[in-house]
Amino acid sequence: MPERKKIIIIGGGITGLSAVWEAQQLGLSYSLIEKDDRLGGKVHTKIVNLPGGKGIIDGGPESFITRKPEAWDLACELGLKDKMVDPGAETRHIFILDGGKPVAVPLAPIAFAKSPLMSLRSKMRMLTEPFQPAKKDDLDESLADFVTRRLGREALDKFIGPILGGIYNTNPDTQSILVSSPIMREMEADYGGLFKAVIGRMVATRKNKKNGEEKRPRFGAFAYGLQELADELVNQLTGDLRLRAEITRVAKNGGNYQITLADGETLSADALIFTTPANVTANLLNDIAKKSAAKLATIRHENIGTVTLIYKAEDAVTPVRIHGLMIPRRENRAIDAITFTSLKMPTRSPETYSMIRVFFGGSRPEIVEMSDADLQKTVQNELRELIGITAEPIEIVPFRWPHSFPQADVGHLDLVTEIENLLPTGVYLAGSSYRGIGVPDCIQQGRQAVKQAQSYLN
Ligand SMILES: Cc1cc2nc3c(=O)[nH]c(=O)nc-3n(C[C@H](O)[C@H](O)[C@H](O)COP(=O)(O)OP(=O)(O)OC[C@H]3O[C@@H](n4cnc5c(N)ncnc54)[C@H](O)[C@@H]3O)c2cc1C
Image 1 (cartoon, rainbow, N blue to C red):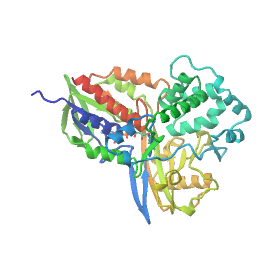
Image 2 (cartoon, rainbow, N blue to C red; image 1 turned 60 degrees about the vertical axis):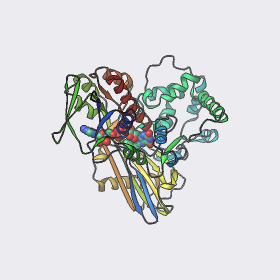
Image 3 (cartoon, rainbow, N blue to C red; image 1 turned 135 degrees about the vertical axis):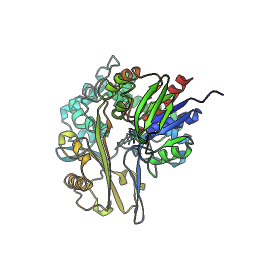
């Protein structure tokens, strides 16, 4: 019998785990190489004991959109459908910091008319959106250019930019719309504009409901954190999963690849799938694919971190209900966003506690390098000044990812195609540095890379 061809998958985040899952489903022989002592990468939940219950803390993602079906479908495939919970519509009670004060994001027409966030002139400009011409080509543009073109500059600066810039921890002036919000370009292409598309999509959703199509919540999450998904993948994987395995060298020998681990062990494979961030992959590929490696190194990766603070409920009361506060960089604060996790997802902590998650690393990258004590001091100072919380938390849990949050600049998808075209045959890239950063994007890319590897091996 001919020897089974083997794939090595490098990086055990959600992309790598999904790739391995796909390999297992296709009956391929695989090894997964992860340098850390756990699997899941940025999908990382910590559970702390509190008097009266548990505090469930997601360091990275805590939910995923279901419009892109890959995360939901994977969870169902793993038998986790009943364990998924609806984290609620993330758009309610969202505020933007403007001139040092939290201002509600106006989502209803009357709130929009009354909102102090934008000038009357800008509101009138936004109302002309349905009459603005649609883009005729499918070339990339920045998020800033798209929003300015359709809704006006102030809508970008005061409204959309802080929300999307905050989600992607990036600068809307450089960020590729085709990677970060392709849906907005699809809406424009399909319906001629955003407002028309919202109405068109509402009508379509009603029709689908009448036709009995499965109703999914807009977001999916897990009661015990997103790591439930990663853990279940690990539970159901039966192949070779290696932790604390750092690669020191990748070499090519004819049609075969050899990777050397830090402990000196050498593994060989017929195909390699790199799911590590592009800046890591650039170093690993340098010996076998210099040109790709040089281009991979140009994909910027910013710092990002979150810190979750748990308070006694009475110590974390704000004058108005806030689920989220987005902090634009022009406000020059030390942190980028605040989420009231316990209001958005009440099951994350017992009723008598409030859980607040703070994002940092975008506006002041150096904060990711701070000691825990300095980080705590900085964050508490911001919470006091911005939303008036002065009490001491009873628990504080930080997560840091230095140089690990990919930035997709305009033209990013073309760059990725160029990089892929320069790779030796049998080498594939997948993950958040390439074709979308969300959990569903990563799952899609991981699984797709394995399908590509399989057809190459055949
Ligand atoms: C704070 C935060 C909040 C987020 N929120 C959301 C959200 O709400 N919804 C959503 O959809 N997405 C969200 N995201 C994005 C999403 O979580 C990530 O894009 C996704 O988890 C990345 O998965 P990945 O497997 O591609 O990369 P990673 O998770 O970074 O995994 C890469 C793996 O490679 C390993 N590795 C690195 N170097 C080596 C090496 N030399 N050898 C072997 N292994 C190596 C790492 O240890 C890691 O395990 C968020 C991200 C962050 C940081």
